[in-house]
Length: 240
Image 1 (cartoon, helix red, strand yellow):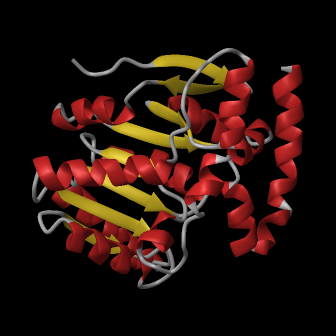
Image 2 (cartoon, helix red, strand yellow):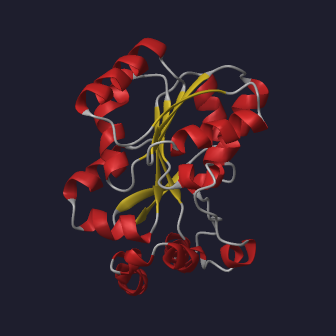
C-alpha cells in the first residue's frame, strides 16, 4: 500500500506531507503515473509570491516536498511535524531504487555546465551498473534542444532529472512533460554539480542544524542578494 499525501499550505502554495516520499514515488513509477516533483524552499516560495506563472506551475505539480529548513520552520509553527526532505536526497533514493529494482529503465539528466551532467551520470553508473542514464548539459542550442525533445518522445524515459535552476527548470518541466506522459520529472537544481564532483555538499553537522544554506552561500557568494528573502520569509511565517 503506497503512502498517502496530506496537502497543506505554505504562503498559499501547496506542500505535500508524507512519512515516506520514496514509497509514494515507487508506486507512481510502477504504475506509469506522470509526476512533477517541486522541491520547495524559502527562496522559491518568495519568488512564487511575486511571480504568478511560477505559482501556477507549483500548484499543478503532483508532489511538492519541503526541501528547505525555512519551509519546515513554517510548518512546525503550525504544528505539522514533517521532516525536511532535501530534493538531492529524494533524487538519490529514487536512483538507488531503480538501480536495484528496475534495471535498465531509461533515465535522463538534463542541465548543468557542459560535461557536468555526464560526470554525474558516470558517478551513478559506477555506483549502480544497471542504471541507464543519458546526459545532456544545460546550454543546448535550439537545434540541440529539439534533438533532446525528439529523444524524450522516442525513448520515453521513466525519470527525467532537470537541473536548470529555479524557476527555469520548473517552467521547462511544465512545458515539456507531455512528451513523456508516464514519467517522473524532478527539478534538481545544482545536484549534478555535487554528483559530478564539481562542488561539495555541506557537512552533515550543518545539514542537521538547518545551516546548509550558509555553506551554499560560502560556495556561491553571489547568492547573497537572493538570500535576503530568507528573513522576510521567516517574518511571514510568524504572521501568516
